Amino acid sequence: MAKNGARILVDACNIKYIKITNDFEIEKCLNEALSSKQAVIVDINIDYSKIPHFLIGVNKAILRSMPIIKKSKLVLKRTYKQLF
Image 1 (tube, helix red, strand yellow):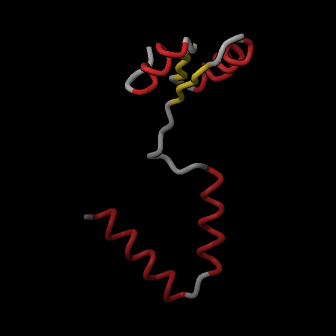
Image 2 (cartoon, helix red, strand yellow):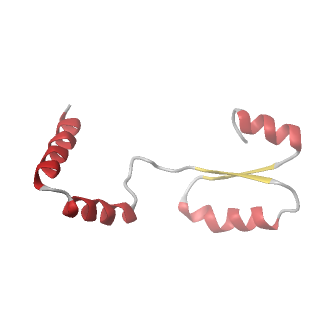
Image 3 (tube, helix red, strand yellow):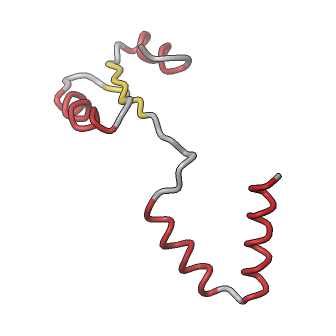
């Protein structure tokens, strides 16, 4: 069931709680939430450790437009953070 503040809200307001744990459950859970006659809290696990695909192109475009000195500083900072 829900955890922390969501549990209190679910119990107090008679709200339905649906947890989506992987990509394969998205459609089923969203259909269940949309067809429900009562309010629904949908809990979705998001992995923030992976860079979204749409941002990869944005980063490349930003790097292309930067002056070479800024670009090299940025690359050195990121490399340093990865190593230490």
